[in-house]
Image 1 (cartoon, rainbow, N blue to C red):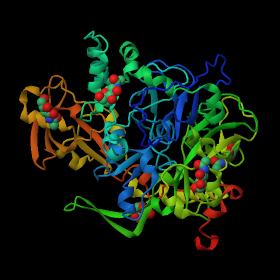
Image 2: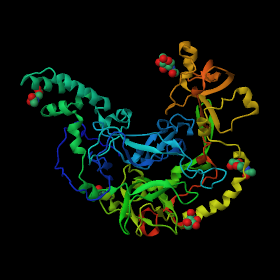
Image 3: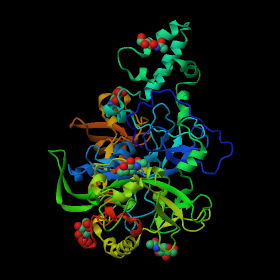
Image 4: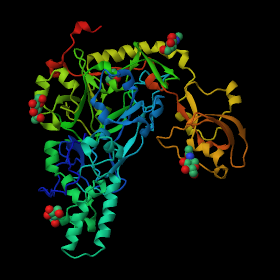
Length: 590
Ligand SMILES: *[C@@H]1O[C@H](CO)[C@@H](O)[C@H](O)[C@H]1NC(C)=O
Ligand SMILES: *[C@@H]1O[C@H](CO)[C@@H](O)[C@H](O)[C@H]1NC(C)=O
Ligand SMILES: *[C@@H]1O[C@H](CO)[C@@H](O)[C@H](O)[C@H]1NC(C)=O
Ligand SMILES: *[C@@H]1O[C@H](CO)[C@@H](O)[C@H](O)[C@H]1NC(C)=O
Ligand SMILES: *[C@@H]1O[C@H](CO)[C@@H](O)[C@H](O)[C@H]1NC(C)=O
């Protein structure tokens, strides 16, 4: 997904020979295959033409990676940063009280869709809160899966069959990498360039004046992102008629034959609720899969040292406005560990991404799918790398070099749940966890608990006032916050009114507040609040309606932070694990 230093976006589309594949070779409609952006690795392609609003593939999970840079310190850096979003943009921000302390990793389509600003065609919905039906008092699986899921990818424009999908990474992604991207046109520049072209065209100039003027425009002695979005002179008439986008589109299309030979199908798996009670979500065959066939494949993000996922005890230091980390006391491990594979004789972790693969649960007796290394050169898999690369080289490598396939071990019927064998160590760890969990079940320190979503869905109950909280407190994990717009109730009385409602959309996280008084109003209650604004001042604001309040889970209180939440990497079979990466011997473990 990383986009390299090519100027591909400026160049008019070079029409390679695109085959009109009349009869599709397979029924697969979604692929992961080499991107049409040179050196950008893999991308996602649709072989079905899509209309605005059409859903693409499975929903994504969003795995919070909490304060990893704080815990890793200067010691490590990792490639997964290129595959994650700032947590606040997906509503994960309050998993930490550090500004931008949380990143979100979506190991499905989210990690694989590239960004080509000239051809943006999909968007992703924000993840929803979903505990997978697991409750911390009842289910040993609680805290072992992410509670952010349901992030749907959908077409935001008509997409022709065969096209690569492109999603906006945000203009900042490009602006903060000027050495790589220079004056690359940003999304708005293509809009502006289209307008510019229309105006240029409406001048009705004759040759050669037209050509000279155009030439002058695009070679003006200053650099501009919009100027860089303008097409070649020869392409003006098409760009005027069909938009600049139409010039780029042909180069972003691959034939079904290419996709089938160089890529992997992504719609053989659909998600559902697992038949295994503690597993939450599961993967199901969306069509009949034959024994020995490749179901899908995934590139692997590597993490050279498992200790990069360690989390330590930390206390919030008000003066420093940051945590003081005590790196002698381990408090747990990032949830990400549960989504990665490794080996008992190695520190390395491989975290796969792709369509639905993270939904495949473990069951040794039901296993009907196995992993195997992808053939050399496919899905960017480099077999040389597997044979010869020591860990020290992986440490400084920030792109994916390895990939594996998921193979059907027997014929699988449509609708059957898919299972992998995560290995004996995993099985043992899980059995021990279930046994040990009985001791935690009775721990009273987490007895009174409700996730914030429970209160946010209940819009009827009034907000408890400071006075009421003395006898009827909210659970300790809950934090009441007021929308930043609350400040305007004091500054601009004309805005106040019961029917004013702000939108609570990430990255909105509001400010800490408390209700000091509840006043009956003909349309519902309004509140007097004490509100700690960003300027550090406390304001008392009156007439604030319910819609300005939202509940958040306090940092480090959601299920993933339960001290006993299950954490275990999945195990790569010994016979396929590269010997060069075995940097531990069994004895050094435990
Ligand atoms: C555009 O202008 C440059 C510099 O004046 C000139 O070298 C070039 O031939 C011109 N190109 C066209 C297509 O007129
Ligand atoms: C695997 O499936 C069997 C049969 O459904 C079930 O009894 C067993 O508990 C499952 N194992 C795990 C680890 O979930
Ligand atoms: C595979 O990796 C090796 C070692 O890093 C490298 O020399 C070789 O060029 C790579 N092959 C391909 C096809 O990228
Ligand atoms: C309950 O869990 C907390 C947090 O891990 C721990 O400090 C405490 O000792 C546990 N209490 C009991 C009774 O096990
Ligand atoms: C307050 O209102 C003004 C004008 O409506 C608006 O520009 C500003 O963003 C608002 N401030 C906050 C913190 O919402």
